[in-house]
Image (cartoon, rainbow, N blue to C red; front, side, top):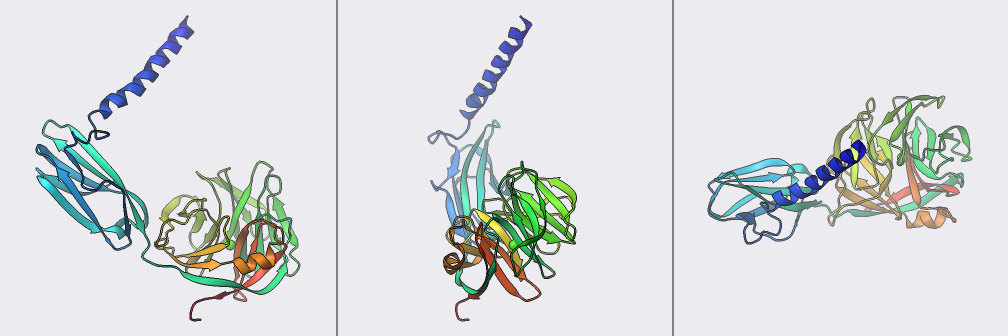
Length: 358
Ligand SMILES: [Ca+2]
């Protein structure tokens, strides 16, 4: 009997949790157009460009003692006893590119509160240049490698591969494409990007939320670190790890703790660029493969603006040969040669970039 009593109590509490928010919501804004005491004067969400002004107009009915405006969860302005239409303009670049929330909260004399909210999408003010990736040379690449990470360190090429049961980190012979030394992941892990910082190789995993750290010479495992969310590509700027997760978001992480220090959202002048995959840090810019496309986007790390899109069509023709998507960007700092490849491609392609007016 005690068991049924407990089950009964759980059901009652469950129903109460469902019903109470519904009751409270009647005092809120949803579907209360005629009763709203304050609301944005525009119906839809807003799209603005970096450095443009976000024009906010709010219609206020009588009886509102306090009106508060929040942008991206920060209080931006307060009006006491507002009347009629109030306006407020601020710069869209304040919290950077991306999707932000705009919330107004109106308080009546009796303490009742009403809210209204919209989203603001802040687009880049830069129209990306088109750079053409041209084939400058080719080298062999193991067509068994489902390439997820590619990076040079002091003239040595490292590759990380994916697929359950086939994921490795390898030191690659640049001339033959063969793996000179490698370490495999346990079959439960799907390898993703790799990067080398301070004599350590960092390898992230797709959905297993774990980053493995190896000695860059011996490839012996030093430690592993946990994180939340998916892992796709990784590179570094000499101080921070820079990681993509399959969305438009890029996180800058502390290499010791793997904690996120800041994030950017990657946008061009039309919207977000999602499915950011393998990364490479070159001359202060982040190059990113865009999954399922022939494109690499070139991103400003300070703000997420895409300044160029590299068209990889010629590389696909040259290197794909029945393989999977383009993935893998690596600059050999010693020779200043740029290489790109794809998953299961049989060629590693030396690339020259044709830029406008160059
Ligand atoms: Ca890379």
